[in-house]
Image 1 (cartoon, rainbow, N blue to C red):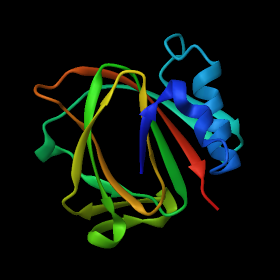
Image 2 (cartoon, rainbow, N blue to C red; image 1 turned 60 degrees about the vertical axis):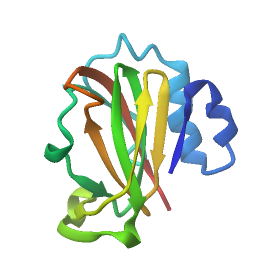
Image 3 (spheres, rainbow, N blue to C red; image 1 turned 180 degrees about the vertical axis):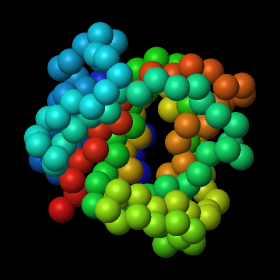
Image 4 (cartoon, one colour; image 1 turned 90 degrees about the horizontal axis):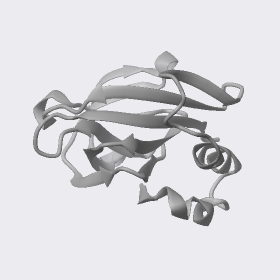
Length: 149
């Protein structure tokens, strides 16, 4: 798991070439002007989902992890709490390999992702995004899905 500001994105260029493509998309596009929806970057290997929603109370949010894709979760507007733990510290309660998604029982470390910051979660990283800091609030976020092979 990585937590950083988008202004530092170039520091991660050597981690994975597709990760670099996803971070470049975030740096080079006016994310405020993009409509909510999905934007391909490299076919089904890198794509960006622009989302808008209200953050939720922690008890409503679920831990998740992915089989094949890493997430770059970038907060465009607002802020949200997230939680992280290694997948080896979890118990799978629901899984769908076709959708590249599993839901987990877990406890982890909580952190705040502020506007202009991103968190990177690889397939080994169980994460619980979408939590409110104090009270639910509107958020605009880009989630970059990166095929991790």
